[in-house]
Image (tube, rainbow over all chains, first blue to last red):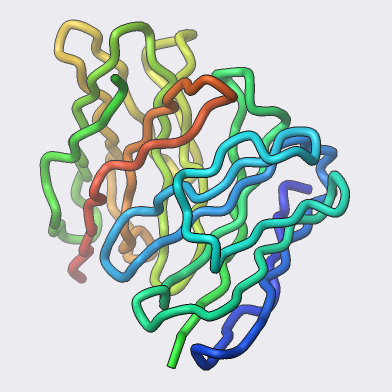
Length: 115
Length: 115
């Protein structure tokens, strides 16, 4: 089973709302990632968690707050977003962050629209 | 620094004809390279990966890629295109960072398959 599950698939939120994106994997992976993909652009890394600890933050604004409650779950808490934050948010996982041979598996993504 | 350049933003082929999607890489050491495919409004699916084993890498759905160090290329090919191959394809390199690795995506190539 090489599945990364993301919910919700679509989310529309106002600029004053607080919402969360959720991601789950049951492959025993210890590294999990959030990527952001704007329309007609490639994905860009936001955060990396390794063994449930934040290891990489690519200078993401604080209105995006990641959380890794356990090794299978990864959340992205959203607050006071701007319309330009509308994008496809992709979760991914891999066995760990250290090995160059590890495959990174992606979920289907959550489409976020900020109005 | 590791990076990839996809040489064509759009490629159009007829069904049943060969597919060639071009990618050049830049890396100061032997890179880990990947091809991912993204169908419209979907997440990313791994097609194949190169991690310094065999230079000819076979992937899913009849795709393969050849790592050529002398040309710093990792082009994706398929002998016969199918309508279902229409999608966006990303060439990706793994970049080492202080606290782990991250994927760096090329700009993407949109493949159109004509009937």
